[in-house]
Length: 284
Length: 311
Image (cartoon, rainbow over all chains, first blue to last red; front, side, top):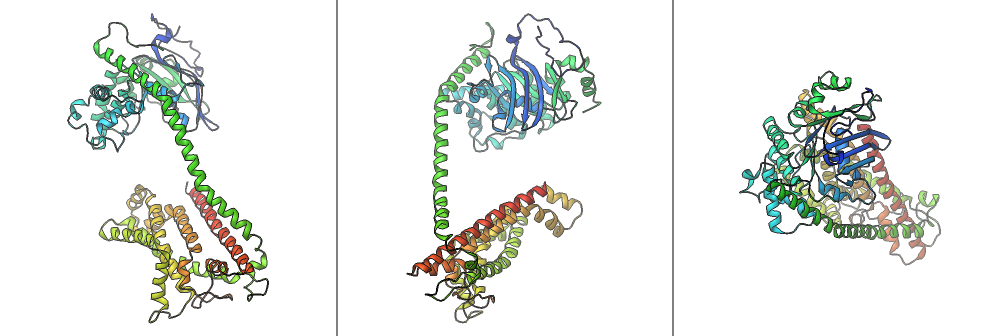
């Protein structure tokens, strides 16, 4: 049984699934499992046949060049394609919840799967506190004490508490870019998701702010499963436990998962020659 | 549903997280039915609002068409009116008058309005603020007041022309169009990214050239739409014409003479007691409606086309 390492149908290298001994069953360690997931927009298939697990309470990096479907796959996990006209086929499981089952409500999926975007996007009309508890309020949590407690915990988690505890009521947009991004992380964490999706969360930040977010990511992974899209391979090696490499397929239009494994394996001894070429910086 | 994701013996932090996670999940599940219900309710409200706002439009177009289309024929469009009591006759005097009056109004309002918009986009400061405010105020001025203004400047005793004329009507309509042109053009020009402006300047291009090649070209779809909508508004405007063009039962092409126009014809004939006159008024209303509709369609078509070219 494959635990940590899953291979895709699209793999052409001929190697069988890598075996790695582990006591647990696959479902116990996978917080998110994707099976044969395809995403298309109109006639254009953006990414095909992705089978991938996000291991519980670990960081999985999705790396690859632009346009190969990493972000598309990430957004398929919390059904963000529902409103943008993307069509998702295949199966996505978050825990035991079948994300695309007929009677699954997207709101419930999203209350279990948080997301952080490329650019910090705090709600500009809300205070710092208002931003952090926005998800809770929208999910019907009214109790002041619960909100307060959750906000404090989330801000602690996002390493922002000491910085903002005295000005929780000031507008969120007064924070710096890096702080705003940490606020967005706190906002996502306040709902206590089991999975946190991060779509190039550092791409608009300076190196110091980036270092802080990266440190945060490694800490968060003790409680939350993280899927991290990044185009920065050094970032993948710094923060992730597992790495999934996406590249454009032979048709040069559809992205596919080329190789998935522990970050160490991917960067030190990749099996697929295309992975090797990509991580060594020869292509992409 | 798995109750907790943490193994037994996890520390207090994990416990707190697990508890809160359950609480949020529970709350989300419980509130979802209510949220869905209100969501559907809100969508229903939107549908009702759309229906309520569309109904008068549809009714108006349908009624005007059903009453007016009978009067319309080729000779209706190409002949001048006959004297009262004699059957036949058309509205060519009003069509020609409207085209000339509105054409001249466009010739006055569009260049001035576009330049004002350019000024607003390029400068921020007291003068620009005052101009923008003035344009907003002008939008709110009743159109009859604009007509009286045109009367005072061009028609009344001691004024520039001294008698009723199509040109005076054009002037009134131009003043009416001006704020619409200014604000529409300004927002069209603002939609051209600042980066492009700077990219042009950074190539050593002169400002005036950047304005022409980058700003005006980039804003062109919006400019065309905005101006055509202003024209559509002016074509149907009646009040300023009451006090300026006087009316004429022959085809007049000299804008310094009194002229007729479509909305003016509608008003003067619709208030006549004879059914023949009222029939012509309905026909004229239908022609005006089609004209305005055509302008809107052309505006959309042209801007879509220009947009495609820009991509």
